Each structure stands twice: as C-alpha cells, then as structure tokens.
Length: 230
Length: 230
Image (cartoon, rainbow over all chains, first blue to last red; front, top):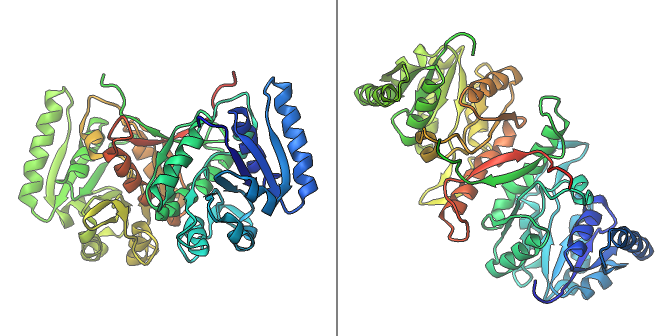
C-alpha cells in the first residue's frame, strides 16, 4: 500500500481479529476494531497499541461499534465474527458497506466439532455473503487458514500462504496486496466458489494440529514450486 | 511396506497413472496397470519398465485388463480414470473389488474448464465411490493434488504433501504408508467428506500453474510447521 489506509476488523476483539490487527498495524496499516460493544473494542485497541509500542512499533489502532468501524474504513472491512453471527452482522451492516470491500475470513466450523465444516446452502460463507450483499459490494474470501496463535505470535513469520477468492478481480487484487503487507504470499485462488475448498481446509489443519501423528501444531498450508532436480 | 505388495493402477496408461506407476515401482512396489485395452496396458508396462531399467531400477510392472489387474492387486487398487468414466468403471468392478482397498484419486474437473470442479451430488468423488461400492469396500481418497508432470519427472522429489481421507481409519493408515514409500509426506485429512476440499484444491493449483502472476508451474501444496522465532 503506497498510501496509508484504514482497515476495519469486525469481531476485532476475538483472537483472529486481534492477531490480524497486530500484523496489519505492524505493517503500517491503520486499524479500527469493530465490536458490538464499542468500549470493549476501545479497550482492546489500547492493549494492542501498547503491545506494539513495547516492540517499538508506532501503531495506530482504534476501537468503535460495528457501524462506526465500517464507516471509518477506507476500503477493506474484514469480517472476523463467529459463524453463528455472520449473516446477522452482515444484514445489519449492508447499507454501511456500500462502496467498501468485504473481506470475509469466517469459517463455518461445525458446532461442537472444529474438525468439520457445515457449509451454508450457498456453498460457502463467501458465496453466502456475496448473495446477501448483492453484486454491488464485492466480497473477497481470504485469511481462513492462518492460525490465530500464529497471527498473535509476532516473533514468528506467518507459516501460511493466503488463498484469496471472489468474483471481483480488482477487489481480489487489492486484498492480495493487503495480505502481502504482512510478509505472506497471497494467491488468486479463483471465483467465490473456491471458498468451498478454502474454508474447508481450516478444519483439516485443525485436525492435524490436534493429531498425535503430526509432530507440530499451528500448521499452515503453502503453495510450493517444483523441487530442484538432483 | 515390509513385504513387497502388488498395487493395481486402473487407468494406468494415462499421465497420472503412468507417473504413479513409475514412482511406486521405483520404491519397490510391484505394479499392474489396468486398462480397458489390455494390450495397451502391456505395452505401457514394457515402456515404463525400460525407463526404470535405464535408471538402474529393477522394476516389476505388468499390464492387464481392468478386472485382471484388480484381481492381481494384494490390497490397493488405485483408480486413475477420467472422471467421465469413474462411476461406470466402478460399477463394473464392484464384485472384483471385494477384499481390496480402493484408492480414488479422481478429480471431477468441470468439462472444458480445468480451473473448476463440478462435484457429484454425493459431495465428492470419494464419497460417491464409497456410496456406490457400499461400506464393505473401503474407499480412500488420496493423491489428487500431485501434478502428473511432477510424478513423471523422476529427477525431482515430489513437491506436494498427500492429503488422505476416508471413513475407514485402518485403510487410510495403509494408504498413508503407501504414499510415504514415494518419499512424500502424507497426512490423515479426516473423513471422506474432506474430499470436497481436497479434490477442489486441484483446480486451484491448476489456476496458479496457468497464471502469469505466479513465477512457477506444477505447484504443489504442503502442510507447514510454524516458522522459527526470530
């Protein structure tokens, strides 16, 4: 991003939202956390700012209610609420989202079973969001597969590539650029229907993280070039 | 595999089948290629054997019709036919598959568009195969994401982890072990329904391979541990 932009993170007081706020603020992006409880968002903003200041990062993070946070965003509104509140949140915000780009990172984990998804009838959460908001508000699916633990551990680079999907190519390219500010690779993974795959990758990673057969947790997924010939 | 086993590869004269035959035979597995045209399978078996012999590998690869190849397999029957012939092939072979493990590697690419899938009503090809064969014949989905070009280029290690799914845990573990003989990591990616994700990853990789924005083709996908802290 050549010009500093303000990004809203809705559900910004949860682990995924906080981790994204830290990573993006560290990269110089202005962040406004949105929460149903504005004072909680403001308190979280103070804590994250202090955390970054202690690392010598001059971050700008503020907090607000969901509508104000959405209004404050220059372009990107990242939706990071639990799946149970996804549709309701979007319905309430739809008028405010006009002129913005919705970055949907929500994974529809099965209730009580983080090793499975229960996809909405539309095929994926990204597609459901696009159907709900209509074609004038671009929805981009991204950032589904990065562990919250990884995002919050600023001592480590992000061990996960970002698969970005959606039906609006220009919006996707902007989101890819945003993801790359965090030092990650981000790829155009196709139309919104690719979210059926990308969202469902998350419970597969969670399964591996829990498994005793895998010698690490907080797994990421990466696109790999061919190996060198021997 | 402590004891040498014979694996059938149905559709073994196509690029994916030939590449798998080369990799597994190189690892010491006996291979029987199955094709509707037995003489074509036999001819391909001779060519692949010569290719491996020229590399100093003492391979055992034979060819047969689909039924004979299936009968010859000790346990694993790898199904590597085009999606259009998937169900028909399985229906014809169902009686012969009793007592074997079907390893389904078929990806339901959309006709005329390798950057998209058209999933069967059952959710995925793996689930469709399991429904078609009934619960007594375990179906394991695997090897969907490895490029045929990569498999056939024996000068390079395989740049792709294998995500293995299915409803029979013991069968999955055997297939994971088989995949590992090729020098790849293979992971238990959950129940058969995970194939909805895993099969759909292939067109995303194909899209990246075609894209001018990605500096390589023949991309693979890998599960990555956390990065070292700096």
